[in-house]
Amino acid sequence: MGVADSMGPLSDAVKDKFQLSRAMATLMPFFVFIAFAICSLPGGMLAARIGKKNVLLLGLLLAAVAVAIPSFMDPGFGLLLACIFVLGVGTTFLQVAGNPIMRDVSAEGDYSRNLALAQGIKGVGSAASAYIVTAIAGIAVFAKMGWRGSFPLFFVLMALGFFLVLIMRIKETKADNPPGLGGTLSLLTIPVFALAVLGIFLYVGAEVCLGTFLKPALQGFFVAANVAPENLKEATEKAGKSAAFFGPALFFLIITAGRLLVGSVKANPRAIFRVSALMGLVGAAMLLTGNKYLSLAAVVVCGLGFANIWPMLFSITVEEKPERASELSGLMCMAISGGAIVPLIMGKLIDLNMSQAMAFIVPTVCFAYLFLLSLKGGKKAPAPAK
Image (cartoon, rainbow, N blue to C red):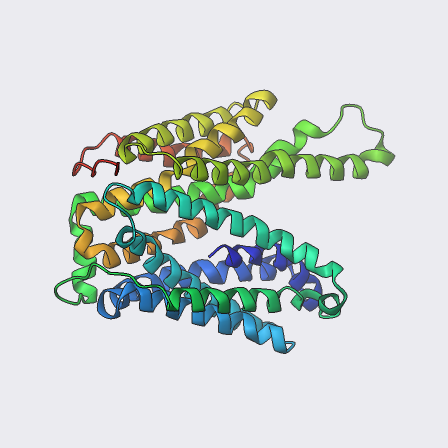
């Protein structure tokens, strides 16, 4: 799943290749979000009908086809966007089927921590794919392919993933009656599910807000005072690199570490959800101060708080009605579209001359909701396996 995240680093290379505007270049990650919005519900219903493992295989097959085309030919921009969309559909199916199937292969009480561990490994894959895009340029045979050089390796990884899933034996939980669209949407009439889907929407939106706006918010802290005009460009570039490292790079590193940590211990998922939501709320509020040291500390606090919202909220929700896991997964994965919408609100506030710091009111409000949601009771989670 993490391979799709490499579309961000690839955007710059594709922008140069096709002489695109910045807005046109952002169509690559945008098409992935659109795939989630369009295909999550059909993916969940399909998983309930043909099985989660088969949808996993379908997702890997679509992803393999998507990366195979630029591996073996030099596509035009239109065809490339089509490939990115197909990759987004494949990734959507992986998320829709992969999250609930983890419950089928987990011991009683281990679902939440195993899902956190899986999300941590996904984070490692996301980071690795970004480095692969850069490192592959140093190998002659791939360097000749230019921006396409990393796609053959991604194709091999997808094919390997397809084979490994194919040989797995999984005893799946299935719904008694295959659901339709109406039946799936009817789950949103149940408050616990509607609130959880909104929670996922706001969480993903808040995460993308920090990934997008942390660098510009922190950059001013790293520009030395009284810089000579002739050195301003160099100082600004240096400050940008420091802000990128101490901002989004550190944020996502802490998220991955936090998920791997929780994935290695046995604890109550509701307690972890509550503590995570509180830390995320405190961290986002610290960013509102505009203070250099509080803002830098907030990156770490936010990373730890954001880390386990998705696996805890997802698993807690599925445990409410495990026989409808595929449909619930489709609804919650559809809510990933929050990553395309919530940041637009934050960006609009900045365009309206709100300060970079005060604009973090958007993720702060998102986490205020998540904290209130974490205080809500529900079905008692199974005790961790001994």
